[in-house]
Length: 142
Image 1: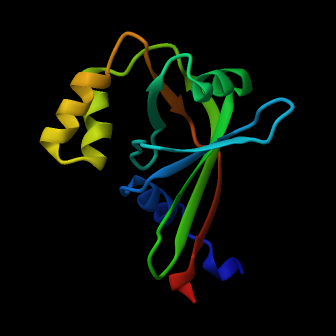
Image 2 (image 1 turned 120 degrees about the horizontal axis):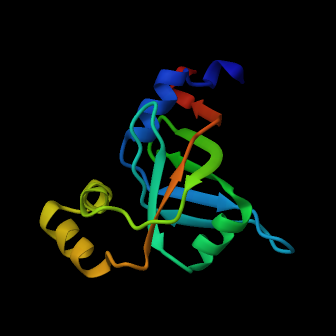
């Protein structure tokens, strides 16, 4: 199976493409929380995830101090990348530019701007994660 593993450059490039991420974070006494999220990532950088402060996700992330995020392709050849690491910041809202960058990855520009205008608030939080451990698989390497 190791022949399907992506190189560091391949996995970082894949993660930087537009995919719905699935965030996974441990919770005491319960199964891990696993929820879809929008995110931003540039190779070599941090994962950026914008959410409401005080949400179930935010509380679980603050308690655990780390998370995993998986991105996958849903068409052939199937691929996935999981990045795991510590939260390096979770105490400030994103700037308008950071929020727009995330929203514009997933929505047309005008819709993304409207989304940010309605959703960005002082209660927003930008979770920044430094990826340290990776898992990947590229079925196209068969």
